Image (cartoon, rainbow, N blue to C red; front, side, top):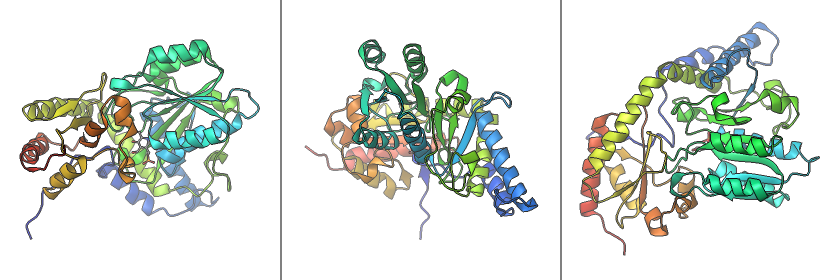
Length: 391
Ligand code: PLP
C-alpha cells in the first residue's frame, strides 16, 4: 500500500499533541492519586493541578499575586456553560434579563443563550458583517437598550478567522453598565494572538486545551476576583466540591497537566510562532491568488485561519477531493459540520447561501510548512479543473 501524505490544515478543529503536552501527560500518568485524597499520592496529583493552573494563568498574563481564579473543566463548551448559566442564575435577584452576544458565536454560546431565552432572558445579537463587530449598533443598544445582565463576545471567529474588537466593546459596555458581566470565548485566540486578562477586559474567559496541542477533553474558565467577590457567578456542576467548589467532579489530572505543559511551551515561544503563522498566511494568499477562488479576508483577521469560497463547487465535494489526496481541511467549524445546515456564521459575515455552501476553512499551526500550502494550492487547482460545479 502506498503511504498517503498527511497534510493537516484543520488546526481550528483540533491540533496534534505537542511533545510538551505528551511529556506532561506521561508524568501525570505515573501519579494516579486522586487530588482530593489527603495522603501523599493525592498531594502529588494536587501539585500537578497547581502547576498547570499557574502555567495557564501565566499564559493568560496573570501575575502570581494578581488574583483571579482558573477553573478547569472538561472542555471549552463546559467552561462557557459555566460562564453563561453560572451568571444568569446567580443573578435571579437582579432585574437585568438582557444578554448581548454577536451574531456569529460558536454554538456553545448560541445554544446556551437559546436555553436562557426559553427561561425568560432576552438575547440581543450584534452584527459581525464583513468580520467586524458593529460598534455603532452596540452604541445604539447601550444608549437606548434596557439594563444588561451579561455580554458574551468571542475574540476570534472559528469559521472566518475574524478578530473582533472585543476589548473596545467590553470597555463601552462597562462604562455604561458597570455591573454587567463580560465573557469572552477566547478558544480560537488563546496563545494564537497576543492578549492578556487585563488587555481583554473580560470578567470571564473561556479557553480550551485541544486547540493548542493538548489533548481533547480539557478546558478552563478564568474568573476575575471581582466577580467572585460580588458573588456574580455560581457553580454549574455541583457535587464533591472539587476546583474549590467551582466545578465538582474528579479532575482530569492527565489532561489538565498536559494543558498546562502545552500552554507553558507555547507561551515561551509565542512571538516566533506568531511570526511563522503570519508568514504562512501571506504565503497562502500568494499561492492561492492565481486560482479561480476567493479568499474571504475579514476586516481584522488572524493568521492561523484562512477562509475561501470556491466557484460553484460544494464544500463537501472539495473537502473529500482534498481528503483523498491526504490534505485535511474543513467545510465549516467541526461542530456545524454535524448539522449540514448552511453556516449562520458565514451568512452573518455576508456570504450568500450558495457562497457559504461552497467555502473551505484552512487552518494552520506552528507545525504547518510552506510545502503543505504548495500541496494545497496544487490540489485546489486540480479540484477547480475536475470537480463538477453546481448551478
Ligand atoms: N468556542 C470556539 C470559538 C470554538 O472554536 C470551539 C471549538 O471548536 C469551542 C468554543 C468549543 O471548545 P471545545 O471543543 O473544547 O468544547
